[in-house]
Length: 286
Ligand code: PRT
Ligand code: ZN
Image 1 (cartoon, rainbow, N blue to C red):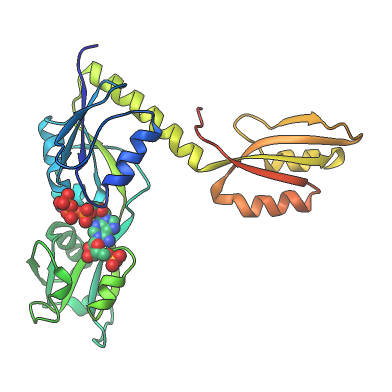
Image 2 (cartoon, helix red, strand yellow; image 1 turned 45 degrees about the horizontal axis):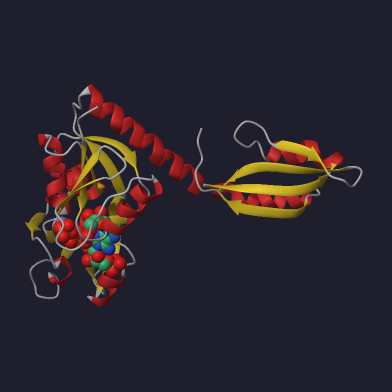
């Protein structure tokens, strides 16, 4: 196979480190760093392009890049013709409306006829239209948070993560209009070779994510409790049960999902499990 899968990543910013880390965990090596604009992987048929995040959806739409990692907020705002193939679970944030602290808020109708500063005119416009509210949208490209204090707008619509930027600018968050995380996007028509490479990459990404979402669990249980305990630990197919040297006891090995971790651990203990070991999983292949 001669073609290289071209993958666009943010050069330097809030998406970069986690994107680079994801490829590392997928066993795909490439050089990146100051001044580098592209790099060919030494062990996977891929070329990486390092770009501003705002340019990534356009490059993927045009087919200059086959795949890209970008914030969902940017992808949706730009409305480019690209396919979202997977959510990546990092760079989580929300797009929220905020107003000056001390200002009255009785719901989104409070924005009727007001000025709202944002870098996301499309997302905000769609939201307001859906709510039947008419307001003036002032598109600005950065430092949106200072707009109310300098009299440019009564409200802002901006990305929030911890909320500390809003707080330090005297603003309070009143409405979340969109939740975002990093996503993997592709060109809409990849040729067969590139599609096969994209599928291979996606398989690795899913295996890495599944491993992060699960833990390997080993425990000892009295045989009379096995039925109850194994029903709480279905594992990938079914748990492994082996006898212990001590008569009447077994060892149970399985995987446990992170989301219901504590509830299950408590139920397993209550059922009689002892000596529970929980171990991280590096990769999980279904
Ligand atoms: O240089 P380039 O154009 O590539 O990068 P950029 O500066 O445009 O983007 P960057 O690196 O700041 O963000 C890239 C993506 O990360 C965004 O499109 C979001 O999808 C996501 N993300 C996650 C965030 C944040 N968290 C975030 N906190 N993007 C921006 N912020 C801003 C926010 O607007 C606020 O002004 O960070 C500030 C701090 O937020 P608080 O709430 O933690 O104080
Ligand atoms: Zn940007």
